[in-house]
Image (cartoon, rainbow over all chains, first blue to last red; front, side, top):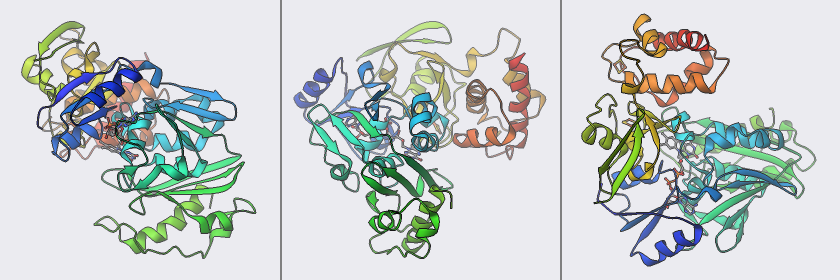
Length: 262
Length: 155
Ligand SMILES: Cc1cc2nc3c(=O)[nH]c(=O)nc-3n(C[C@H](O)[C@H](O)[C@H](O)COP(=O)(O)OP(=O)(O)OC[C@H]3O[C@@H](n4cnc5c(N)ncnc54)[C@H](O)[C@@H]3O)c2cc1C
Ligand code: FES
Ligand code: FES
């Protein structure tokens, strides 16, 4: 790993100004993606701005009809939160499937969303629940946030502060884990929300997306039978040694049905 | 070079490190605590597991500077003189190691698993061990040892 200038931020404003002042800076949250990326020299920033000291980015609260999760909240804290378990149990379930206990003890929701790995778990829930990503500059709707493989609507230096998940009437998540890495090969988050049925899919494509054909089919209620026989096109889907595009397309339907008890 | 201070096995330590110095390098090369192993260096195998502020983490994926002020426990901090920690004793008793390379990380993870799960069954142990790879034992005796230690640690 090449060396870099390590800086620790003392506030959100301080983080943003340290980031802006450096040549080519990156934020550091849990480091569960960032440190391996630095080791492999996939990225060589001049500066790393550590958000670890920003206590106000950690924590889970209820705000109106939504659960608000601070960007630096770990996957473990989401998985074991009584509030999340009682209001959006499917979200706690999802957080509990990420990686392994050591990854969950360190990795954060903000880091996972900013990174937007094609196989990351949270994007399925963010899309499935119609969450809002709050940053130091604005609020971004789920449908506008994930723009491509490892790409998001975040601008240079923009910092995620929290994610607000509207509490759904009903929701479920299921994924088919990669037997080695535990990342989802395909994950489906299905929810009945105030704004209708939403289906978020991760792992299948270069970027998480909504399966609108399933949303239409489930508009009368979350009955897994309604999804039987709906073909998903494999065009543009990921294909690798773990699963072909055709297999992933097939899994999208199977995981969505399992997410709602089928 | 920046300096870092933390508590390791209840002792206050500090040192000069680079931005890129990993926690595991700080432990092994600066402090001489070579009980924590590096198996893969790619966050997969768990051999480097230590506890940071009471939670199991992979020390090959943490920067030393990241942990300024933290409380770190390594395998060296578990025994009380000649008396092994119940988890170490259970590994010995149940023949839960062969070459021993994965063992420090296994033991540190296993203690985290017991602390997090008051009612441990075999399925939970196997599932929670997902982040630790052992090339020798086939896991069976490791799972038995953790189950036995969980009982001892209750009492
Ligand atoms: C063995 C293993 C298994 C894993 N399995 C899974 C899995 O099953 N599912 C899954 O979803 N993930 C998985 N992960 C990834 C894990 O969830 C990471 O924790 C996560 O992707 C990144 O979070 P982090 O807090 O560690 O972020 P970091 O690694 O610190 O940062 C990641 C990126 O996000 C940026 N960033 C961080 N925080 C912010 C912020 N607040 N605002 C703006 N940008 C920010 C950083 O600059 C960096 O580019 C796994 C990782 C490992 C090592
Ligand atoms: S050496 Fe850290 S996980 Fe393998
Ligand atoms: S005992 Fe040899 S790797 Fe586990």
